[in-house]
Image (cartoon, rainbow, N blue to C red; front, top):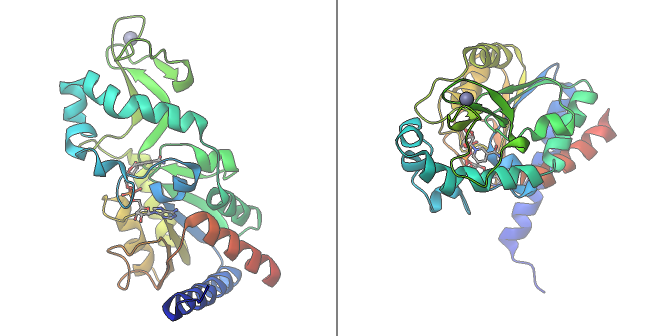
Length: 261
Ligand code: NAD
Ligand code: ZN
């Protein structure tokens, strides 16, 4: 098959940027990662936005807003949460999560700020994970506050109910809810003290998470994006975008970095 010149050019550009990222990581003192749903796509968890995203089928305000959940929990449980539970239960960390864990082992990365609720960074081995939007690993009862592991929830009745009769909801942040203040405080601190931020698989449109690369940039850090698509950060806040999948790209960066160290 004859290769198309623009594809060759793109591959060369990708390889050069991967080498660049490895060099930047080799020389940085302290990197921080900000991750979004895109890093878990290769673990078969669909993102919200972008190709194949959940929002191609659902309107976020109709399903992921706290008012929607409180008004009609049966609808939100049936359309979104029931499937999400199964998908997250089956998911395993991919090379993207494992690459960030390896960066921690190499002493290059302390903190992962994630918008994800799937717990895959912790499973991969990162020890300081700031969960901006909570975690799907736990649910709590709207009536009595009882907390229960997601795996123990019985889905034979929707919405699932606590022994007290109250409805269970996931311990994650719906649209319209506040970000946990500790997560916000710690993220700002991590973003303003790092000298390199890896922004992986986020559409960078959900605030205030999307502000973290701006905080990092203003504090003098280099900002590297990994995403198959451009985002509002591209060409303004990020120093460069490596236009590829998180798993493949981070695996390539790590093997280059380990050669340099
Ligand atoms: P998003 O859904 O808005 O955007 C996903 C981004 O990932 C897009 O920019 C897309 O181009 C990119 N992407 C797609 N495939 C990729 C790949 N293989 N590698 C790298 N990037 C890829 O995600 P968001 O910015 O995180 O914001 C949406 C909110 O949705 C989050 O706050 C999160 O709470 C929630 N969410 C979480 C999960 C999860 O926990 N895995 C899944 C869906 C949504
Ligand atoms: Zn209860």
